Image 1: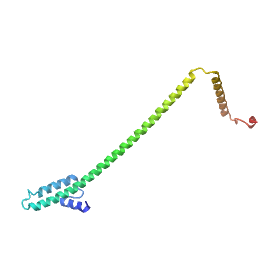
Image 2: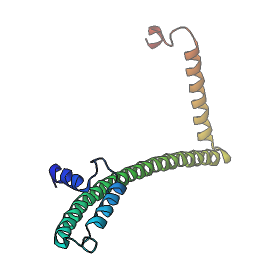
Image 3: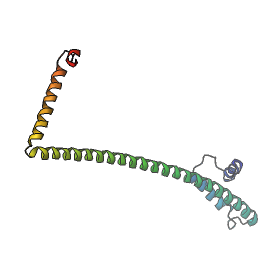
Image 4: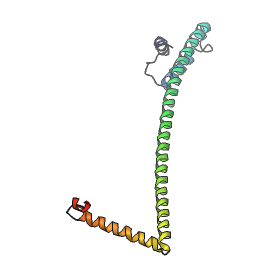
Length: 158
């Protein structure tokens, strides 16, 4: 279906190349009525040949219109599919973030439960000594950090 074929089909139907589908159909119908063999009593064979040309032109243009319409529908369908994929990806990302947040909450609850469980029983003497040593070490490091002088001098290591 070349450009020349389409141009000839438009010329045969007597319409411009930017005609709509409705205009093409209307022009075809009026020509079919004019050249119908039952209505053209003078020369039915010539009318029949002309009607065949008119139908071929209409079929050519109708096929082109159908192909263009199908292409537009395919493009719209592709855009809808891309949008659906984008929305699905966003939903999956949100679900993953929510799962990570819930997992972090569960981990924090479990850690609190361990702390509560450890502090709920009385400590034995070795655990108390280790706790006091850790507290003293922490206090010493805090005092060192808060002082303006260096933590240790060379004399202390000698």
